[in-house]
Image 1 (tube, rainbow, N blue to C red):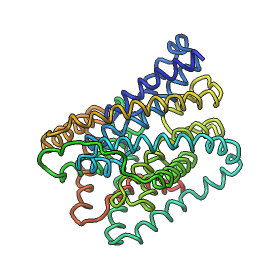
Image 2: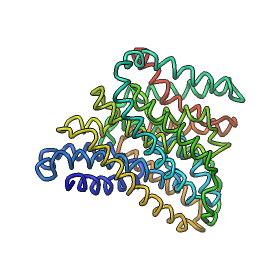
Image 3: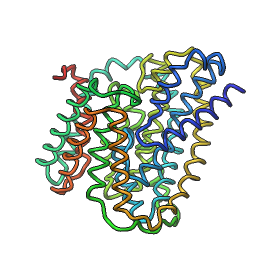
Image 4: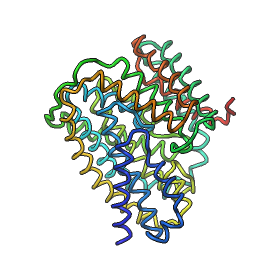
Length: 404
């Protein structure tokens, strides 16, 4: 019990720190902790260290909505959900947006934990079929989204060009500095350009409106529906190879329009993000496959039982929910801030972070991604098709196509 308590507390502290610092993921912390593995194992013990890593990942999925909502900076896992969340903030509803995201993650815990156990027991035997059909599933989803769009030609063009950019960026990811960003460092400038800076450049000017919390304006049935959809999407992309929460965000956009129903979309994507963390643990134990940097780090440690880590994850989620709701009250500090100056400061911060984490190649990708990210605004097409930057590489990977 002492090791569990230590893992929960340390993990929540580290996850809160990584969630509040844009561009820093729990994967980054996992790499740092793994570097000091020998010392930490001697001091904390295997259960406490493994619990710290997993609790940090769970906490990060809750807290990362705070900078995404208030500053409009996307994380690799929140690239699309940042759009409606920041839009609500610009309307004076930033606290509500953060609370809705926290609610979605909390609901995911209730649904994802038992489903992860079922996946652990029943899905390994079906894994060869999943590996074969994942590319076909993604093509079907994106094909449906493009055909149903108001401008299928433009939608296909944006999807294809962003796919080429994403494939190029990931193929030459080794050119990044990788100082702190881990093995997927290039995702930071890629998604920041497509969904961050390009949005801030055309955002409304003037002072931010007064932030007021008027309660959660979302119906109970919407909470249930969006949480279930998001959790199922998160579990699907967490179990299937080559996918990520960003892929789930794109798929959810075909069911829940993030421009028409912002609150439902925030709920669903937050649920997907947290559910993805739990199913990643199940995939590690059932298939010996790692779905993110934290699972890679866990695989290097003497693993405790899965049930112990699940208990730690649930306890961390309870604390993370309280912390996230408390942080949402900081929305009032934005009252009257000059929106133009804030946007410029955020852009400079992102550029500086890209230089630190990825170097010249990252800046090159950031510029290209920002230019491409401006196109949907110019031609009035949904920005969701920029998710081709993630989906096309996954499709090529699933079909065994070698990247150029």
